[in-house]
Length: 261
Image 1 (cartoon, helix red, strand yellow):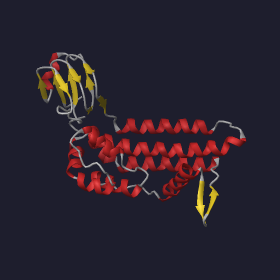
Image 2 (image 1 turned 60 degrees about the vertical axis):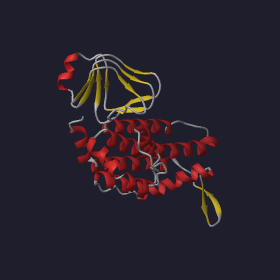
Image 3 (image 1 turned 30 degrees about the vertical axis):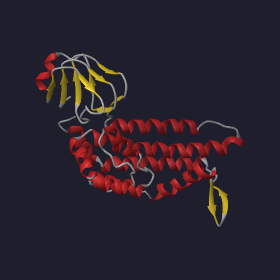
Image 4 (image 1 turned 90 degrees about the vertical axis):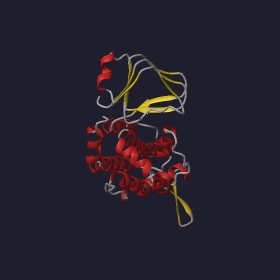
């Protein structure tokens, strides 16, 4: 732990949304020697008194949440691990032997769920990269008007961390044109190839809105998701995530190695 705020007392949240790198309680008083800031009394958190998200908070006493929310950030590797765990679960489910009359419904549900795992990965990674590093956080605030326009974000109030968090997670993660522009604007990367994923998103759209039927020549035609289609989706999503992590290699290195890590 590098950059952190030391509280000589307790940290008590009464309201608001407060996210930090790490919460630490019952720390020895000598921790204050290397703190970037020392607070000589209890720290009361509310809508007006917010934490700095890219720092850790260390208290000699306890950390208590009466009302509101306190949260810790996830490293990019942790976000990747959660995605991989979700996909492993989906793959395990895909191997279940279900009755033939339920197969269509079952595979449709799995197909849609796999893409949901990918969408969560995209927004969760974006959120943690922004909140966990001063440079990216400041850049997000500086470019908020452009990001709002690109992301079609309705809420223009970024006065609290909760509103920033909501704004990020309101971004339509399967609209790769939007997401790609935001990633490129913030992290100066080339977004991975998504043409095959976009075709698969259309299938998920049909599953979500027309029970798996696509509109073709003014008729509804079943997509008939198969195990082979599901396998191809797994491979395509995994390849996209791998390419994303490669494209963000330098960004993640900055995040991991920054002084506020």
